[in-house]
Length: 101
Image (cartoon, rainbow, N blue to C red):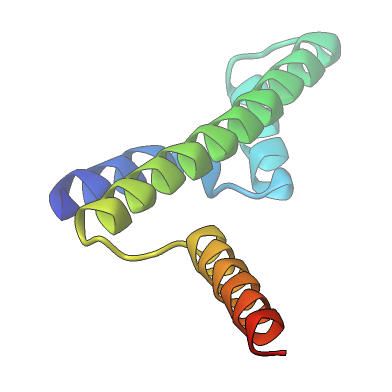
């Protein structure tokens, strides 16, 4: 499972890790080398920025799913589970206190 997580992160990290400035710089460089018009260059930069944002979102979602899976396998409680238990304990304590009154 850990190996899958590493591969997933390394696969998506390329485009996802690029900053907006780097994506724009890459787009301009490609446009110049390909002799694209200014309009075509702008479209290329926009497309690269959109794909970079999508890659970041996809990477975050994949990592989240993998981490949740690992936590479930290790049987580690989530914050939500802990809050539910705390709430239940409080309810039981209140009920016990009312019974003793």
